[in-house]
Length: 383
Image (cartoon, rainbow, N blue to C red):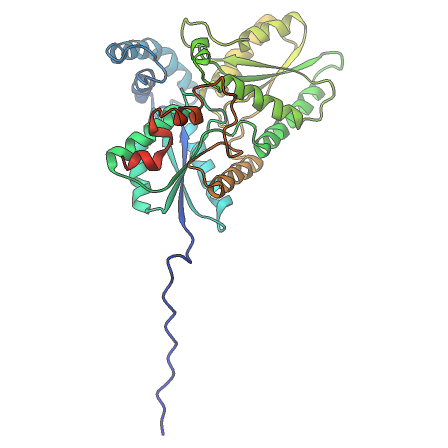
């Protein structure tokens, strides 16, 4: 008797519990103008942010417009040096692609980029995230240290976009990774390599000082409880612990003062002047920036170098930003893995809160006091 040919058995149905959960990793960053015409609206968005311009809301739109108008000419000139636009978006997208590759295949992840003050804005990125239909979201700021003016503002902006578009999936928010061991080790390797080259270029009798330069803040914001300065100091301590430089001369300083208010000190410019008086060469490390942009490529590489030459600093060197450095990307991947496994909707690089209680604007403190729910996205989006 003839038998019907055997047919391949149909695969058993896939249990949804067996498949990997789809994780949208959203990288939060500042953003930058993508053309000369975008400089003015970019600055307007920046200075109308209540986290930046802390004045009564009734005057903020007008005052922000005025400040942006006054700063447009100088900012346009700076971006002209960089080809008429900021390189930040391209560099952040490169970091996103590298991180996505580092997470796969262990994690079914797709990395997205959301900028605060220029495209792609949070609302635009959220539409892409929703189209991909993730099971969960992980928010990863590309600011190592938390500040209400940077990470906090970006997190609030993302949460507002989620509320407006009715998006609610389980979300983990990483608030900071200032002292993450992988990040500290990767940064230390960049410092060590640049220090070695700088030392080789200098006469043996010329001392070399490392200036760990971070973006500054008005003292009033720090006094109100912002943990940024404390976290910057923790970053520097962690990086220095990985360096193998006997008798390392170093200091934390702050750049980019933007208002007449009193800002945290010492300033990077003042430290350059001090180094000139002491006949000491300087190696500047941008400790709060992980991508090259105007504040490294123009302010550090051109303006401060010219300052150093003018006042007679015997040598001026600069550590590159991390960009897509393999060690740095591996550190980000480690932060993502630990955050996903930690079971917290809001976490630091180490899990629980890291900031001393004196820093009341730490996001953990805000959440604990029933403050704005923007730092607890899954609950906020469904409110």
